[in-house]
Amino acid sequence: MSRPKITIIGAGNVGATTAHWCAAAELGDIVLVDIPQAGDMPKGKALDLMQASPIVGFDAQITGTSDYADTSGSNVVVITAGIARKPGMSRDDLLSTNAKIVGSVADEIKKSSPDAIVIVVSNPLDAMVMRAQKVTGFPHHRVFGQAGVLDTARYRTFLALELGVSVEDVSALLMGGHGDTMVPMPSCTSVGGIPVTRLIDPARLAEIVDRTRKGGAEIVGLLKTGSAYYAPAAATTQMVEAIVRDKKRLLPCAAFCDKEYGVGGYYVGVPVIIGASGVERIIELDLDAQERADFDKSVTAVKELSAAMDSLV
Ligand code: APR
Image (cartoon, rainbow, N blue to C red; front, top):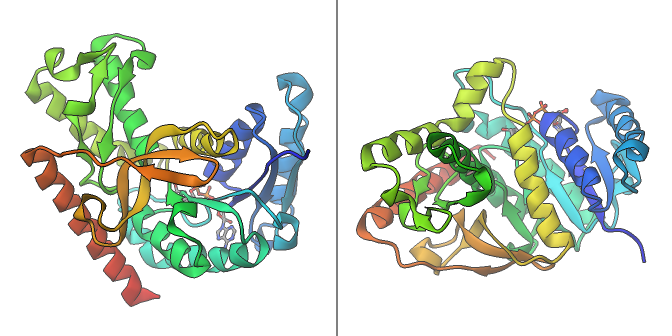
């Protein structure tokens, strides 16, 4: 029996860090792909990472390439290709450039790994997943986006810091698009089983939600030369693990919703079950009036972004 084959496209910060964590967790053999102009950089990172294996203790073949023939028959493909945000840029500013990059990458995946499950990480996320699905033509359950796991992790981190408790005891859910309109769900947030609303007053909770919404920009502002990668890569690795180990994790992901939540055919962040087939189920919750209003606003932003992208490509 061979190991799962995981291809990561874009060997930059998010891609290489995802490779690092997938390797350390022994999730499979890894192929790191970048453009020919990147030269031997993906090969160098792959070899360097594999030389960590005797120390960390993992068995995996890790290779770097710019040739999609080396990726053929991948079980999982992660798309991180694209340009990252610079200070002052919104995720939407990336729209035109990354839509072209993700489109060309998706076309290659369609030919080289027709049965793969595709996780999109490139921003602006909700539009990029839509692009990848349209170009591959893969069923919707096999193409979805990483955003909610990261946003929720940021939220959980801030809540744990606020309360001085272990992050492991904070369970939370954020829905909607991966942008400033993401929707916190206080009714689905608890600390050791205690509803968060019994531990933090509404005004302070609103401040924490606001910091979460701006979590990506906060990192961009500090790094100055790029955007976050440790937490995005960790979030992506959790999704890869859910697939290759068929874990049936309940995670917030950008999944294609048609009738679900009345979205009408767009990718948006919702709680889903992730297993060996990809998105195996979308969990539909009854939203209260505030959550519904916030969710609808977020879906409107996603629709506008998708329309803007369609006019560009
Ligand atoms: N095919 C393969 N790789 C590509 C392509 C392409 N067509 N176009 C660009 N790349 C590569 C770049 O050469 C670079 O090595 O994608 C890599 C991107 O790496 P970084 O610039 O380090 O960006 P990173 O921080 O990894 O972010 C990548 O993930 O979180 C999102 O917003 C982020 O859209 C951005 C993406």
